Length: 268
Length: 262
Image (cartoon, rainbow over all chains, first blue to last red; front, top):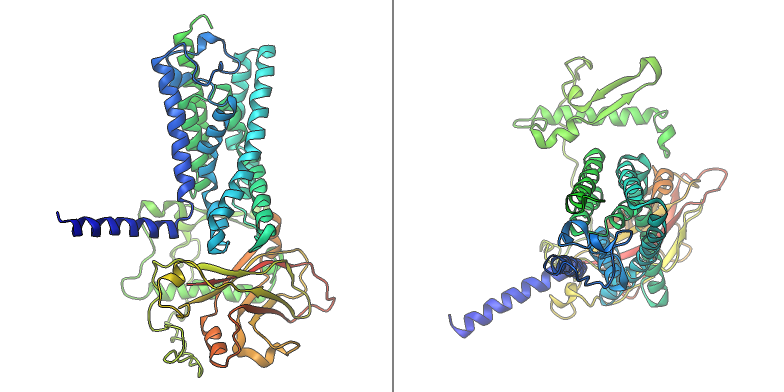
């Protein structure tokens, strides 16, 4: 292959990538979510190979050190704790749900402001979820010693499954699709993007809170997070998502986690 | 007709919907035209509707009403001839031969729309005409870069977005661009780009973001360019009410007006 051919192929690839970025300004949000998932998977895999090392430097909430086992993928290693873990989890699980909103922000902005507008929107959106996530994990940490992990975990699991079939959940979900007018330039444009991020964040919290509590209950294990993420994505993007199927998926993965927990620690 | 709850009390609602059903039959009567079948259509074919209430309520699925001659419908149309095509509209000032617009060249799907201007505030839709000004920026994205210097956009679109409110001052609004100040809109029909209907605006406002409309205003902009009445840095959009209500109330407003080039 001659140098000219290699250059032509390189140009072709670069041109295709450039055009993809024109039509899909949300591309880097997808990349960010993928990196966050890799980080979370990496932490889980480290947990498998180093059973007594907690890479997040913490113990899964509401569970004893004994639960931080070589089954990190199934039982979790407290990915939701610590600022890095919280941010990674919010980026991995929540950002893909905002792709339609991100496109609205980008396509409603002047070309030179597209990515700045997306960034302002996302920072506001993530900020809402980080506060909520810290509150969920904190409350869970206070609650479980009082009522016991089994009771609290069982309630969280059933609540998440029931929330999936509740009509009010579908009403809340519709709010996540809302758009709002954005000023074209200046501080008002930034303020509108930030306001849209916060509004979308609150809508997302009122829709997905039960799943996030369930994720916290199972110490944000990779398996639980992956299934709950699938349920969220199906609810958001499928034309006719099945609430029953979603509830069964939530129950199934939680029961599987409980079974794995008791298999490894029968005294619990 | 502007509200979901009362639309069915207007006789034109029934004429309109019955005619849509008839046109479907006319379409089906053409060669190779059939109703959709197969598993991928099941969600649509199994969609059900409850008609009536109480003991007389009837629940029907879409697949039960595909053939009008079969129960429970049991009727047929006396005339399902295909309507004649609408005559081609000839606009005297729309020739693209010497304009900046490349009308004959199809718009490339590969060049994305670029937003070049938007209103800064909400625009009330009142019982009198209201207007809003939009500052336009020169495009800086691929819509410009892919073309020779000084070339004009091939397409111009106007988006009227997030129309929200509960009380209507008028059932419809005609949308005009670059009307002279204080002009009577009806004297400038060549500057009309479309109409905004208030049907469903209340329901869309209660449950979500309101209504959004998009208009292709390429030809109108082209005519304004030819008569040197197009300002590439500023656009004025006017919303003129059609049959405004006597009480002149209303709280409907347009969230934003956005201009796109392609």
